[in-house]
Amino acid sequence: MFNRSLNLLKTITLMIAFTFVWPAVCNSADLDRAGVENALANAKNGKPADLRRKDLRALELSGLDFTHADLWGSDLRGANLSNSDLSGLILDLTVMTKINLAGANLSRTSIFGVHMVGANLTGANLSHSRFIANLDRSNLSSANLKNADWGVDMKNQPMGLMRVSLNSANLSGADLTDANLNRSLMRHAILKGSILRSTVLSGSDLSVADLSNADLSGADLTACNLTGTDFSGAKLKGTHFSKNLDKSQVKGLTSAIDFDSAIFE
Image (tube, rainbow, N blue to C red; front, side):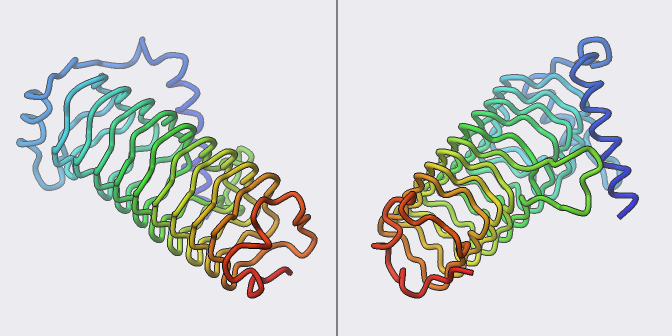
């Protein structure tokens, strides 16, 4: 646990340095798709393709296999990596604003402390992934987040509370079964028709979020901010809420499916 905290501290320090001195230290190769493909083709076991801190902004990189690449600190702003395989990678400290990862495989991938505002993750495989990132206004519709661990680790916060932000994000139709998103920021998020069976959302800010027609069976919504949240047509069998929840501030809650079996504790 100490090593994990120390590594986190190092990551945050690097993030600060990265923000202010990037232009001076980035040895940008200005690679095109052919150059990236060549690097990937020459990757060997134990010696991944070196794409560290490379400027890959706005490149067309769809459908590529990056599983044997090192993308630490790379600049992927506006790049198209749709349907690419990035499973199992550590993408901490990359820059991914408005990146296209639609249909990409990010299963078991780690993305920590990354700015991903406006990213396209439509239909992406995010199962078992570990994200602590800013995904505000991103599109995660129909994405697979089964068993994703995007929640806060309260034992590992040496720099203060760091959590995933999904404000105004689109998660309609996404599958978050057994995912952990405790203490996440999801104001105005769209989760219409999403699957949240046994999902942990405790302590999250879901104010004015759209959970209409979502399946929240067995989900944990204790200590959540649910002011203005829409539960119209949602399934609430065994869903956990705080005992002191002001139901009058929540839209469609008492008329939702299986409301009588919801648990208020």
